[in-house]
Length: 109
Image (cartoon, rainbow, N blue to C red; front, side, top):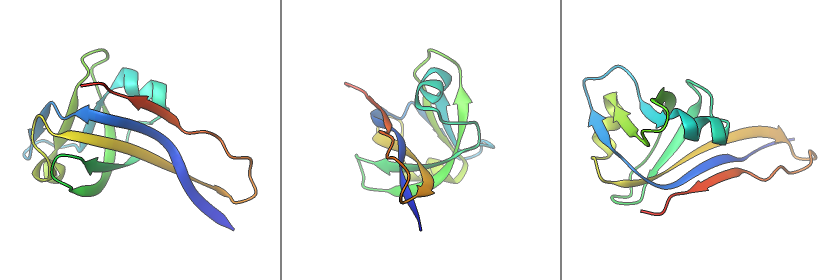
């Protein structure tokens, strides 16, 4: 039997920009992506703390060190700049596999 478990979480990060006309989805600072092990075009779940919206999209990298989180295309309608969000990625494993602790980055705003 397979189960889906949390792989990584970027907790309480602020959305820095939105653009519904941009071709892309959720841009994440490349430093955070590397630290969390999130790959380019990997599925991510976004939980908007500010308004309660929850949605699934994919990640792409923003410039290293800028601490930018952008929501683009259809995702831009689910949040606005300044909203606090949680970004999670998950993995599928065999239920008998040894549990690996997820990588978590907590942002203090």
